[in-house]
Image (cartoon, rainbow, N blue to C red; front, side):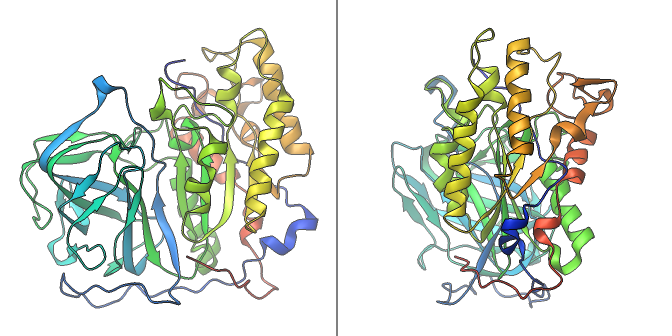
Length: 438
C-alpha cells in the first residue's frame, strides 16, 4: 500500500508480579532548572560520570522517492520540538543515516521558541561538535553535539536551528511531524532572533533527539501512525505521548520526571517494510536497536505496533497471528536483555476503516487476546478497551474518531494516555535501581 494505516495505543495496565523488580524505579531526583544564563560560548564536553536522558525524540526514515526529495541551498532550518522533561544542560542528535552523501552542518543553535520562527534572545546558545562550530556527518551516520549550559523547562517549545552551507537534500527525515518548521532565505540565521522565512515544512529533517543531563529514565513509545499522532491537530502537541508526559508529571510529581520519546512512524510495520515507501521507515524489528536501545536513559518501552501488518496483508488471507506473536516476543526479549520494562498495547477497533475485512478483524482480535492474556508483557495498555464503542465494540467510539474509523482524534489520544498503566513507574517502598544512563 502507498501509505500504511495508523497504529494502536496502550491502555489499562496489568503488571506481572514476577517482573516487579524491573518496575521499581524508586524516587527520582528532580534537577534544578534555575541555572544562570551563560554566554553562548559557554559549553563543554560531557563529563565521564554525567548521566543523560532524552527529553524528545523522533524516528528517522527515508529516503523519500527521488521526485519528492526536498533540497536546501545555503539555508537555515529552524525546527521546533516539544520537550517532555527539563534540565540545565542540553545536547542534540542529528542524523544522516539515510543519506548517500556527506551532510555539512555549518552552524547550529538552540533557543526557546517565542512564536512562529522567532526565539527568545536571552536563551540562544550556539552548539558545537567536538569543540568546532561545524561538522560534516558521513553518509549513514548520526552525530551528537557537545553539551551546552541551557535552562530548559519541561513542556517547552525548543527551536533547533541548523545552517546548511552549499546544497543539502532531506534524505533523512521524519515525515509526519505535525509541527511546522521553518526554512530561511540563503544565509546563516542560527544567531538571528526573528529569522526570515522563505517557506515552511511539515517534517523534521536531520533532527532525531534532544537530551538533557539528568539521572532519570526515559520511556520510548515504539509504534506506527497511531503513536505518530495522525488524526490529532497539528502544532498543538496532542499525540498520546504528549498527553502521557503531562499526565506522568501531574500524577506522580517528582517521580513522574520521565523522558517520553515518541518513535512512532506513520505506515510502519513490525515485520516488513516497503522499498517504495521508505518514509514509513524500516520495520520495527530492524530499527529497534537504533530507535530504542540507542535512546539516552531508556528504561521503559511501549510496544504499540501490528495494525499495519494486518491491514497490508491479504484481505481474505491475512497474516497469521502466530507471526505477530513471534515479532512481539522478539521485541520483548531484546528489550529485557537491556533490563527495559516492556508495556504492550492492544490494537484499536477498526470496523469501518478502509482496510477492514472480517478476516483481518479476526487476526486483530486474536492478537489482542494474546497481548492481554499471555502475561509476557510487564504491563498492558488496553487501547481497544479505551477507544471502543460499548454499543458496537468493533468500532471506535464516535467521540474519539478522527473520521477514518481507526485513528483517534485529540480526545481519543487523551483517552489512550489516561489508560496507560502508571504502576510500572511507581514504587514507594524500594530504593532506586542503579541504572547506567548514557
